[in-house]
Image (cartoon, rainbow, N blue to C red; front, top):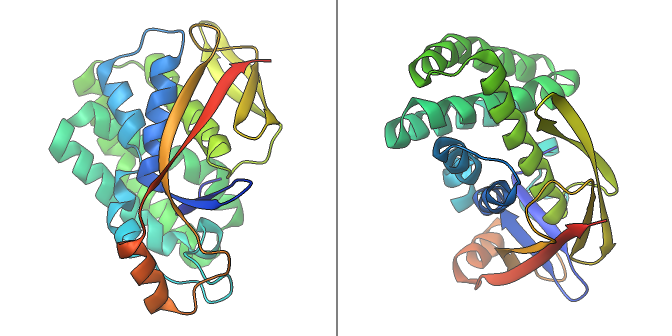
Length: 250
């Protein structure tokens, strides 16, 4: 469900999009929803991948694909500690409410997409993360005054915009059915791409008749990198390029 680095394929280029840049798009989507949201939730939406900052500055090199690997090639033994570090950064920077939502988002991903496919070592890393975070999440929820229903609503909203951002960034096969929480339970939203960069949602969960999001990525060379050194030169020397996408009702 999530890649360390996302790849958006366009007609004349392929953009590598970092996890923090993908989270920025999630934040834009969250702010556009037709529902009142708290500032800690909005901030968590924009920063939920803060744990990947160090990795994105110096990713590993996948010899088979000749580019940075996706999550499917990197186990939880590597990324579970990164989630923990991200939660710690959020706690020290913004306090327990934001840290709680980021911690729960990691746990939600692991429960839904991690454990069913994990080998023994990765499963142990995931279970360790979940066990360590559970009492802290309970403490932070109490400190923030969040009951279970409101906490689940906020977590589900973050999961919805995260998945929709993945679609915009080219990491989710479309059409797809996503869940967005409503006043009395979750409702399905069908997401399709009518044309490149033109996304249609049914039903429409945002304010207004449509809006545009923007992002930044690094253009990949038409062929893979010759070696790890070439990839690292690309990371430091390549200019960022903008992209945009439009979302509208189906």
